Length: 256
Length: 207
Image (cartoon, one colour):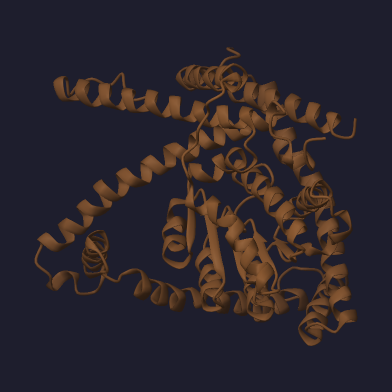
C-alpha cells in the first residue's frame, strides 16, 4: 500500500512551485519600494459610492452572496473589502447594512465591522444588528435582500462574493431603485449578469487584489505580483504546448 | 492571544488539509472525512443556533421600532410554527410540516425564481444596445446564439447554429478560461495569505 496518491504528482509539483513563488515575492519583494498595481475602476468607485450614500442620507447595503461559506477565498476577499468600506462608513457616519445567508459569515462580518469602526475612531457608531442572518435558503435570501433594497432604498449596493442565480435578481432590484452598484464574483456566469446590471464590476482576480489595493499593505501587494509571475509562467507553458502539439499532434505530455 | 490561537489553528489545519490531499492511505481519508464531514456538521449545527438568534433579535428589534411590522411578525410566526409542527407530527410523508413546506415554501421560492425571467429580459434589453463597435459585435453574437437555441433552429440555414457554437466554444470559452486562471491564482494567493497570517481581516483586523 502506498501512502502517496500517485495521480497527484503533477498537482503537487505545480502547487509547490506556485507556493514557492508566492512566498518568495511576499517575503523578499515586499521590501522593494516600487510595487505598483494598476487602477481598478470598481475599487476607485468605492469611496464615491460611500460618499453618495452619505450625501443622500440613505444606507449602504453590502452582501457577500448566497453561494459561498467562510472557507471560500472569495468570501475572505469580500470581507477584506468590507473592512475598508466599514472604516469609511464609520468616518462618514453612514449606515452600513450587511445581510447574509450564513451565520458564520455574519459573526465574522460583525467582528470585522466592529474593528473597522474602532480603527476609524468611532466605535460608538457601530451597531451589531446591522450585520444579520436572513435565510440559508437561496431564494429566501434573495427575497429578503431584494425586499431590503426595495424598502430601505440604499444609495449604494455592494454585491461582492460568491453569487449564483440570485445575482441578477439583486442587481436588477438595485438598478430599479437607482442605487450605484459595485459587484464582483468568482463565477464567470454571474459576471455577465453583473456587467449588464451594475455600474462597476470587479472581474475575477480583481476581487482578490482588492485588499492590497485598498490597504496599500506591501506584503499583500507583493503577493498580487506573485499572481502576475504565475500568470506569465502559465502563458509560456500554454505557448510551448500549442507549438509542440502543432509539430507533434500525437504528443500528450502537456496534458497535466 | 485571542487572535494568535485562531491563527495557529488556521495554519495547522491549512497544512493538514494540504497534506491530506496528496495522501492515499485509508487513515488520511478517514481524517479528511472526520474534519470535512463530521466536525463541519457539528460546527454547522451550532452556527445555525447563532443564525436563529440573530434572526429573532433582528425582527424583534425592528418590530419594537415599528418597521415593517406585518412582514416581520409573519416571518417570526413561521420560525416558531415550523419547529412546533416538526416536533409534534414529525417531518415525513404527509405531516403538517411537509404540507407547509410543499404548499407555502416551495411556491414562494418558485415565485422568486420566476422573477429571474423578467429580470433577464430587462437586463438583456439594456445590455444589448449597439452603442459602439464592440457592443454591436456583442449584440450580433447574442442574436445568433438566441436564434440557434430557439425553436426556429430547424428552419434556419445550417451556418447560423454553426457560428453560434463557434462563438461559444472559441472566443467566449477563451475569455472565460482567462478569467478562471486569474480566479484560481487569486484564490491561491488569498488562501496562502490567510494561512500564513499575512491577511488578518477575518480575525477582525491587524491588532
